[in-house]
Length: 173
Image 1 (cartoon, one colour):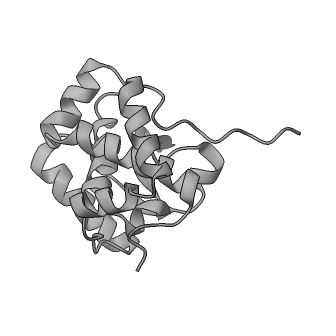
Image 2: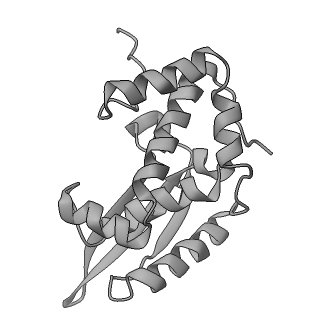
C-alpha cells in the first residue's frame, strides 16, 4: 500500500498566494506572521462549551434551522475523513412520525486555535443545515454569518499547510 500524499490545503488558490505561504514557511516566518494576526487561542475547550457556542451562532443567524441534537469535538475526523468538520442528519421512524437528529462534529484540531478559525468551521457546518452543496448560495450564507469567512478559511488552510511542513501547533496550551 502506497502512502498517501499530504493534502494540498491551498490547491484552489492562485499561485502567487500559494508561493507567499510557502516562502514564509521556508523562511521560518510563517508562525510569527500568523501569531501577530491571531495572538490567542479561544477558550471553548469542552464539548459542552462547543455546543453552547454553536447554539449562540445558530440562534443569531439561523433561528428557523432545525435543532441540533449533538455538537462535539471529534478526534477521528482529520485522520480518517480528511475533514475538519462534519454535519449529519439521521432520520428514524418513531411510531407514525419521522424523527430527524442533526449533529455537528468538529475536529479536535480546533480545540487550540484562534476563535476566528473555530468560528469559520462552525459557520461552515451550520450553513450545511440549509445548503448541502458548496455552491454560491452556500458561500453567501457563510458570508452572512461571518463577513470575514474567506479570509479565515485561507488563513486556516495556510496554517494547515504550515502544520504539515513544520508540525508544531502555534497555540497549544
